[in-house]
Image (cartoon, rainbow, N blue to C red; front, side, top):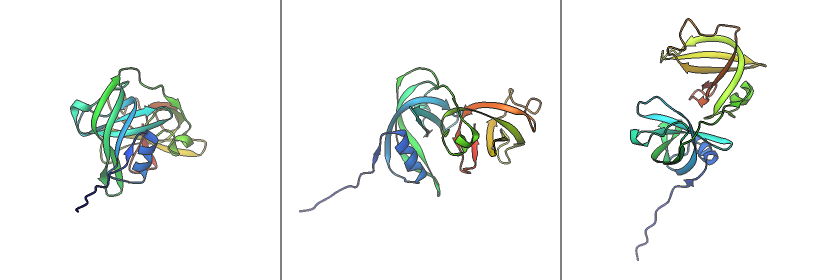
Length: 194
């Protein structure tokens, strides 16, 4: 008798478990997660979108234009954990089912320390602090970085330069600012894009 078997990858069903697998750099596991889309990346492919589900949020990468949801959509995303770089993994969607349309989740007001600890990752957040430095991204000049300080914590925040944000109206060193956006962990974990 010939016996055949297949090892099945784990099925991930919630955003917290998916985030843990991404941080552990586990590749190959499949996921089915539900949530509300808070942000969709630039309309070039591949791109990404963020979903929030209660107290947890995650980032999902999208390679199929037909699967791209809109902010506020309640979705069920299917996919797998794949390799992005040798030391980094990401969630890749294989299909997106739109369950309903709605509103973008309200921003959570967090301290810089909370955001630095990862409590704002993949979420819509509002933060307050003083500008310590301001500079263009050395690789992609479409992004501008702000070093923001509050109560001894410094956080680097990036935003896309456009007509609203140009050299004439950028915050300056010492300015007190309130920033709202989606918090995205970069490969350099001491920086967050907002």
